[in-house]
Image (cartoon, rainbow, N blue to C red):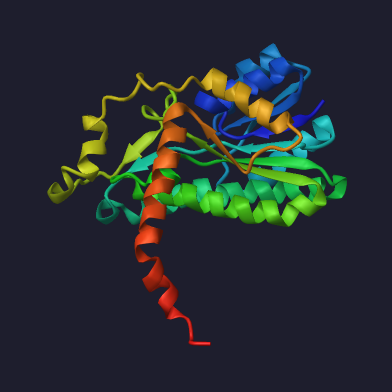
Length: 276
């Protein structure tokens, strides 16, 4: 029996994953900023679920939650960094404070929880760290530059982490979901407060008032949770786990586009070395 610590379990994929892991028979430290939103999960699994309040931007709270999980279950074997929210703005429109909060939640929040669980994982020479990214890190749509940036940072961090901890028996996985039918495009999506008219046809097309995608996404979070469990239980989990047909198609399209650029400029790119 493993013990999972999952951040951001109040709604969406985090909630579905916590419930699926508990139904599977493992222990889960179920977290949310408002613990009342996950008390029902702990009530249904009183022996294997621990509901704890967690704001990943709070260093002390992160350490307290990891300690509480270890006290209750003995170890943290799987960390899933799922907490986060969306932010849409043209790069010029982005408010400094809002962008800092976004990075503090996604990037520094991920770093906090990873650093909190690693000492125990290193001591046991086992463990799995799963960091939620987004297909946005690959395709960087207009209007999602800041969100794409935090997810790209998480992926780079995860790849370096994987290379550092793999010799110690620890796995690190980045997950790129596409669009799932959760509350992400509803309550969990924020945007710049003052739009600039010149971006109406680019970033403006993705503003909340112009977005009709919420509630129609093809991705099923219950199926995504099952796939995550399957990947984490496998002997050789991937570095990059794509979730959804849209994610796979967009990922391949982005790679093809990048390779086309590399091919077109390869001779020029190779001309910058000293002559040997």
